[in-house]
Amino acid sequence: MKIVGVIPARYGSSRLPGKPLADICGKPMIWWVYQQAIKAKKLSDVFVATDDKRIIDVCTQYNICTIMTRNDHITAANRLHEVSEYIGADFYLQLNGDEPLINPETIDMAIPNEVPKEIEFGTNIITKIQYPTESMDASNIKVVFDSEFNALYMSRIPIPYPFKSTWFSYYKHVGIIGYNKVMLDFYAHSKPGHLETIEGIDTLRFIDYGKNLRFIEVAHGDSLSVDTEADLIMVRKIIEKKIVKYMPPPPPSQ
Image (cartoon, rainbow, N blue to C red; front, top):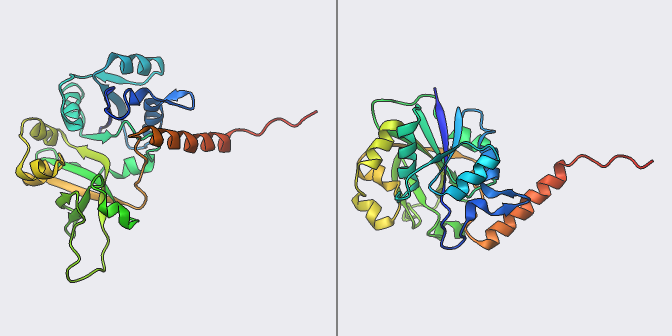
């Protein structure tokens, strides 16, 4: 089974322009994301998909496989669909280009053992919310699912509502989403559904139209997303500590 990992990368960012090329310990952020992605055991190939020549040039410098895509894509899923038109695969995995600490094991967990080819099918990594404040943060997409982990709904508010019981956990979406080819074709040729236009969550389109979206739970799925300068500083510190930890000891003095 051929599994292709795709890292969408835009240069433009309202809060952090040029984010994919931001320096982290001497390397651009996209390099760190790519290095984590190629450690995943189940990925056949990994590509950076961008619409900016500056990102292409830097990726070429570091021998990172890249694909130039159109500049009119509204969502990452649209960009993945264009990639799927060029590169054939059984499954395409969307990996966020602003998560240099992404866990390769989590990437592998997003890939099912079998992928149907004739029906629309996708997967979405989720994890249990650990802190109450996370459930109130609208940027954390809360999810509900049935006993087989099939997606029922996604929302920016805490769901389900604790009316008769408080003995449950909230779960949130983690930004690793997988699609087969027909799922990407559906997305590219459909319009936002009713729920998607209300919540502003593009993954809700699959629920709007009754498509097969399977949630996959991981115990520790969080990876710090770099959205601000403060996030960038924090990631630099974390990676600096890892570099120091794994540096070989200095030779003994003579």
